[in-house]
Amino acid sequence: MKYIFFSIALLYGSLFISAQNDSLQPSLKIELPTYKLNLGPIIETIEIPLVAKKASEIDIKSDHWDTTLHNPYADTVQQFPLELNFTDSTYASPVPHTKVVTSRYGWRRGRAHNGIDIDLVTGDSVVSILSGIVRFAKYANGFGNTIVVRHYNGLESTYAHLSYIDVKANDTITKGQYIGKGGNTGNSRGSHLHLELSYKGEQIHPEYLFDFSSKNAIRSEQVWVTQKWTHARYHNSRTVSKVKLIKSADEAALVNLARQPKLYVVQKGDTLYAISRRNNMSLSRLCETNAIKQTSPLKIGQKLVLEL
Image 1 (cartoon, rainbow, N blue to C red):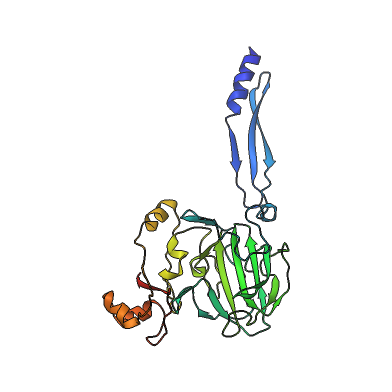
Image 2: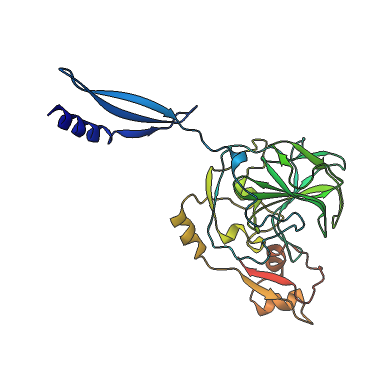
């Protein structure tokens, strides 16, 4: 009889398995019943430490790892919304001094500016904003001397126009580690750091993810990215975009259904005045929306934003 009772107690006790998330060391607690004569069932608890997988153990080189291309995802199409998760609450400032943003992510002179420009003097140190592995470290057309670091959540950070590169592809680096010196190489009108953030080839508005004040704060541990925050045409490089974080998949899906901006492709013989008249908008609003001047020359094939 006691063996039947013991079996029932063992089955009952196996239901009391629970995981404990401790701030220092997560563990699994299992309650195992034993049986002693005249004492009835006795529950004994054993605790098994759980070892969380370290960021450095995550294989971020398994997907489109190419050390020769600035963007190895050029021929892929991503499904929106994108989900990003961070384990840090802060990032390291890429420059050692106060960050001064001279040009923001957005439409600039009729073209997409897919990052932010941070003022610096040639020779200033540049560091990685987060830990990761260097995927690209060489000269790139337009970008000059460029470093791309892939981080452990899949996000990539690009540091362009450098005067000197002090890391090489496949180097493992830590948050805040020195990687090179700022400069004015490539298609640049003065010394500055061009910083881009991208996920699987989709450039993301840096200020949607990071607060570029002195707080160096990552805006959220989990964030959903819609097309609004991956297309420069939704933003003006001269103004600060109003950030409203999306923290759920359902909310992201609704936002993704929002109306797309209306674009106009410049044709031969077009003028800014004629384009504004044909599309029932003022010349000043057309220029302000596209961050251009009324005297700016137009190029055939250039895209102008008519509505946001």
